[in-house]
Image (cartoon, rainbow, N blue to C red; front, top):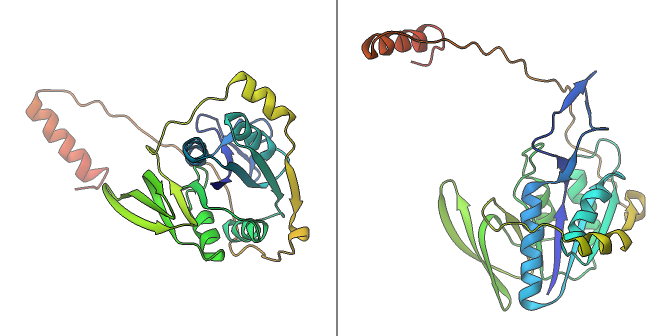
Amino acid sequence: MEILVLLKQTFDTEAKVTVKDGRILDDDATLVINPYDEYAVEEGLKLREAGGGTVTVVSVGGDRVEEALRRALAMGADEAALIEAPAGADEFTTASLLAAWARGKQFDIVLAGNVSVDTGAGQTALRFAEAMNLPHAAAALKLEVAGNKATVHRDAEGDTEVVEVPLPALITAQQGLNEPRYPSVPGIMKAKRKSIARVGAAELGVDAPARTEVTSVFQAQQNRRNTIIKGSPAEQAKQLTELLRGEAKVI
């Protein structure tokens, strides 16, 4: 089985993000594989272990994205590719680049994260599927592949929906699909020696200018004020009601 995983590099969810002059400073920030994409990598490895084949990971971005690709290689992926992103690339541009790169290549299944933790847009993978004319199922909590179809148990706003899609298809991973493995020391050493294919937008012949524009970036102001309520339970309940009605204005 030939498995493709779409991967994005994002900030570590524990990292402190600094904004200066309307720009996010990431020079010293810790960047990682988008956690939802890591579930996709793990699921690809599990499918390969069960039925053979290869796992290829591909990402769009700058030089630092190699760090995320090499971690995926250390986890066990077989091949990796990096598409150099033009300035200002958005989800439309990214999906267009990924689709241009993938056309002509044979993959039985494409996996990706349900959303990225930095933007939360959840667009790139589904745009890719539409561009490639692939059936797709989002937010997979369980994936079963048999023959030429995949059965997907997907998160449906608190419930679980079961759908079947013919292969090749794109499936996006939701939290709970699996538990990503840690790279082994031999895996890390092997990943350092592997080459990563690089290609530019011009080489792919893609002219897909961004359809969205970031007009401003700023850190939210925190004006949290704590109020300690004292007295008997009845008095506390009365004070809480007054605060919710008068200050918070939620009742």
